[in-house]
Length: 111
Image: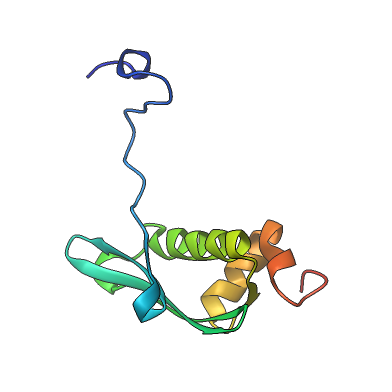
């Protein structure tokens, strides 16, 4: 296998990052892993996005897929100026573990 420097600047020989797509028509972030659709569903009301459900099938669970979905959702919210309501327990726990996203919520401190 070629070294990363042989592949060019910024190249890596490690695993390729998951391609999470923003499906705006369906109000969700999604990716397909080994044929299984994984999702983060949200409801948008003006500039407030309620993240209501994270779904990763058991067959592909435990790989950080939900974290990738939520991180992409939160980064999209930041870029678009959305406030986030972490209505899904996984999203709420993710934000507690990653306080750099706390400013997107209406919370003023980490619970």
